[in-house]
Image (cartoon, rainbow, N blue to C red; front, side, top):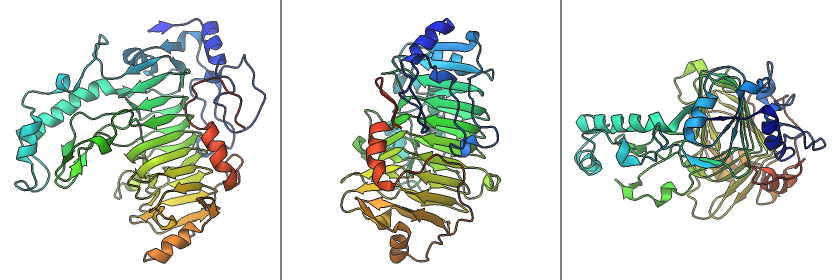
Length: 429
């Protein structure tokens, strides 16, 4: 791993100054190091209870430039304040020496996909698989996990430099706090060994996974399935052989997260916030704000929420014909989703009534929504098509947020400003 002199890092980071700033406007300063930036006051739930400072206090000895998976994993480990700049494009499926690995390299003794499909075909097997073939699949999956999972420590800032990207990784925030992720392009967290659970394919890896983690700022991040969309996978047991899990999962008492100016696209199960109806420890947690982000062709979970107080505002949702769109806002058990001034662009046959989907939830606040350029009461559309009705009272109103723009301004603002920046641009606001 290459440790740079602090002045060199400042010079590199200065190239991005103004390109990925949060919402409050200010003059661009070419000497400004975005790796030292912290989440602004009142910018969503992440700004509560001390805010998010990431690695802004890092000393020169803990500022890094990384160019591959192994350098990244080493740089982000540990809890001392640190700033990590990601350069170039690399894949996480490599060994300790950096040599590329493919699915065959991860296969454990006894693994055979053809035998697995024959053994657990629903025509001859009922329920979840058990036995040597399933054990071999799990062992193979664990082998891949040792490469693709990158554990991020507390008090960390990770910044992607222009034209950088990470493919095949699961950035994992497990039992940590105070992390900033900015300008990262994360692609294709591909699972080599999906498992059949008796009625559906299940996969393991998320591009970005938060568990037992608090105080996180995710800004100008782009996440997608890269060159391997699940829709292109073969049909097996009547379903596409699933290769991807979530884009951004926030679970297991994770809390106080702000997601700003990011882009999530081309995926099935996008964002799961709160991972189980019986996880009562999530009560009072899963407090998340997402604003000025673009959600394009997510089939579902934009997000799906359990328990949490979630504020989604000024986001742009796009669903094109043939995308298989099911819904955007999943209302799970005890969820308290507060949605305002979002814009939807839905191709036929998708309608406003499909935006909300309910699983054990009872309420959503929804206001100021535009659907295909027209104001629409999305909650009323849902209630007209479904029983029982959802209540508009979620029992709280957000107080921590940046300026809430008119919904008519959202498509232009978000299309121009969201996602990882590939070149030097002026402030979008």
